[in-house]
Length: 205
Ligand SMILES: C[S@@+](CC[C@H](N)C(=O)[O-])C[C@H]1O[C@@H](n2cnc3c(N)ncnc32)[C@H](O)[C@@H]1O
Image (tube, rainbow, N blue to C red):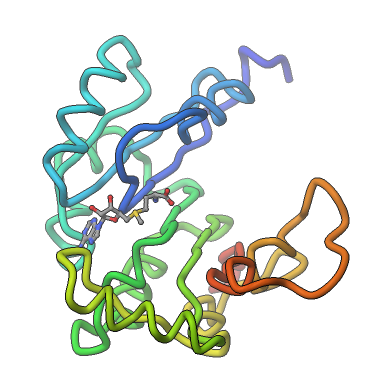
C-alpha cells in the first residue's frame, strides 16, 4: 500500500503538556501524513499554546480535560469526533500518572482507559520510580507543589500494564528503552528516576 493510501494511525496523548519540539503529531505525521492525534491536558494553558501551534493541522486537536474523569474525557466531542475507538489507538500516558495519588485510584483509571481501547491498541506509559532515596525525597517536594504526585515502585508501574503484551524490553528504567547507544555502567540517579514501557492489547482481551 502506498504512503498516501494507508489508513490513518491515531493517538490519544493524555497529560500531553506544553508543545515542544517533535511533538507526537509531528513524529506520527512524518510516518503517516493522515495520523490523527488528540492532545489532552487539564491545564488550559496547554490548550492556548496548542491551538496556536495546530491552527492548520486538520488531524490534530487539543482538549482540556482531566484524566481522573474518563467518562467526560472520552465523551469529549473532539476526542470522540476525531478518534475511532473501534480501531487501534496509541494511548500515551507520559509522565502523567505519577500526578495521581493512590486515593484517586490510578490503577482503576488506567484500567478504564485500557478497557475502552480496541484490541491491537498500545499503551505507552512513563512514571517516576521510587527505587532510590533521592527519588523518594522528590515525592515530598511533589506533594507540596501544585504538580502534586506520587512515586511508585517498578512492580507497581509494571502492574499498570496488566493484561497487555509487553513490547521488548518490558518495563525498564528509561535509559534502557531502545537506547541510541548501548548503556554502559550503572545508571545514575537521573537514570533511575523514571521507568516505563509499551504494551499491546491482545486480540482476545
Ligand atoms: C510532567 S508533564 C508531562 C508532559 C508530557 N507528557 C511529557 O512527557 O513531556 C505532566 C502533564 O500532565 C498534566 N496533568 C497533570 N495532572 C493531570 C490531570 N489530572 N489530567 C490531565 N492532565 C494532567 C500536567 O498539566 C502536565 O502538562
